[in-house]
Amino acid sequence: MASEYHNPFGIAQAQFDLAAEKLNLDQNLRAVLRVPQRELSVNFPVKHDDGSIKVYSGYRVQHNITRGPAKGGIRYHPSVNLDEVRALAMWMTWKCALVNIPYGGAKGGVIVDPKLLSMTELERLTRRYAAEISVIVGPERDIPAPDVGTNAQVMSWFMDTISMHRGYTVPAIVTGKPIEVGGSLGRVDATGHGVSVITREAAKHIGLRLEQAKVVVQGFGNVGSISAAQIGEMGARIVGLSDVSGGYYNRRGLDVHAMLDYIKQSPTKTLEGYHQTGTERLTNSELLEIECDILVPAALENQITGLNAGRIRTKLLIEAANGPTTPEADALLYDRGVLVVPDILANAGGVTVSYFEWVQGLQEFFWSEEEITERLDRIMVRSFASVLEIALREKISMRLAAYLVAVKRVAEATTIRGIYP
Image (tube, rainbow, N blue to C red):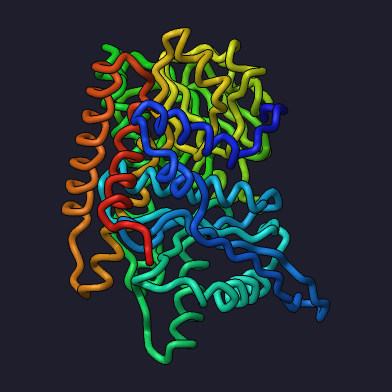
């Protein structure tokens, strides 16, 4: 991983400031949009299987709810901190506005390594965290979803906890749930599928044939693995992949499906020990610097910085993760002609299908997977085209173009609604 640390909330504010300046936003409006509306910090005890009790800390931040209820995932990770959650909530606001769905942005997190907890400990932690933040969540207020370290089972526990408090089942309280309790078809693959659609459209724009493309994907969780598998199915050669165990490089191409099968059978649920003839082991940092046509960072923030941007050798950079590229790196890559598709566009497939799941839950009427995929593809293609048009017309980066669209929509909604009281 890149070693240079940048405060993620500082990065999020700097990205907003660039767009606000370009849009010539009123200073009062800038002051409102540049900070979260609500921040909840909680400290709560969890009883472990051995009878010991540990106090965990968590957060739920709502950045903006002008265009609709807040929406955003819940992250379980040792590095969670308030500024990270603030940044992720802010990015969610712009992401929802960019694809034009009626949500504001939120994010949550607990400082914990979920791999160190048993299933019963994880359930107790989830239920207690859900109870602690229940004062600000709800189908019309704030709808959580899975993120790093959480999954459909965690969402099911969260939904059940809130439902027990209410005295009736509230399926629309979260998205990313199991199908059996009101989840949507296509939700598990949604973010990765959206990344693959955006990759296809971006490659088409620069005249790159996917059948001839070498691709590197950093991160092999839900988003990275699905992105790699689907981009590979489009004809590209996946030459590099990584997870927490390190990087794996094979110039002839990695067998993504074999790697997925290996993880399912691995006691550590990682690629540690995986072997494929001709495969070299690398660090995550080294993996980012492999010469390739398409680089897909799908891990955590601050991976491509001013320290390593000069060694990034790719034509396309598709941000499947949130905030993987710092502003310094952004400028260096833009000057070198690398097309960077920003996170708020590239990984918006997840929140888009979360919106579909929420709508289905509210009306208790469900769509087929074909309908879900068709709707998602249409939104992703349309959003990419609109951002690209602005970037080409204004001669600016794709990131700034995306922010111009998103910030303008939120600013207009804020102006129309006015300031209460």
